Image 1 (cartoon, rainbow, N blue to C red):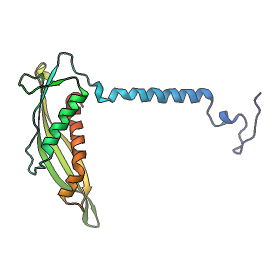
Image 2 (tube, rainbow, N blue to C red):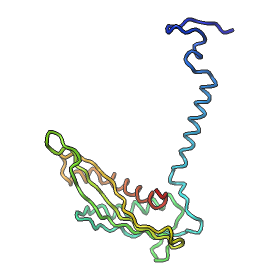
Image 3 (spheres, rainbow, N blue to C red):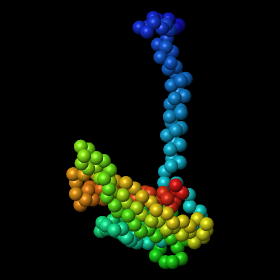
Image 4 (cartoon, rainbow, N blue to C red):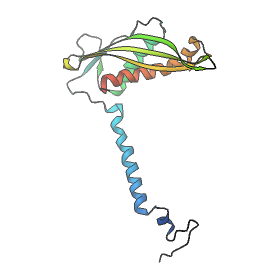
Length: 188
């Protein structure tokens, strides 16, 4: 038997109902949150859709043609992109000109600008890294494209460029590889 009680806010009735949480509402909220979490799988990159006839990919060495050259960037970007394609697609990497997908990238920009000023001095600098991506699909030439991919990386103006690079290089590599991969395999 339910009893009506007087609460501090002046309402009467069952406390669960007064707060708006019945077991049915709680169950519905739980179900909605569970479904929304499972829906997130749509965006995982392990579920990249590649036509079944595409079997091979060639990822050419990423050349650095920027005005300022970070010597670690080219080899690390190339290696990490190859690893990501190997781990997250079923494609076999080959070095021949007959690969179904041919990926060629060049680092075209590696520029530092001032991003923030405090008390009439630079407080934050921004490193802008740009990679030009050339994608060739030998089985469907309508899917070929060439496009720049760019990311900004902010760092304290108190750091020299060498210090900033030491801190930022792992982040630059990861973010640029993700951007290139998404541009090629996710059509973003």
